[in-house]
Length: 70
View (cartoon, rainbow, N blue to C red):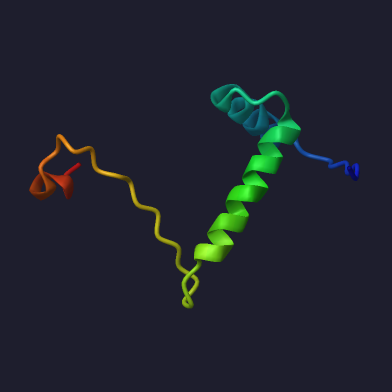
């Protein structure tokens, strides 16, 4: 595996640490790997105009008419 190093500021370090805790990642490097994988998914889903749609699945117990308010 190739080794790469980055210089990051304190704010980015805190963000990586917060994400590490939130997702139970074993390291900040794991957070970065997941972020890169997600960015690749976004790239593949990008529309010709550059837009990307993220949809939140509506739970079955919510009536579809109410979904727009959810």
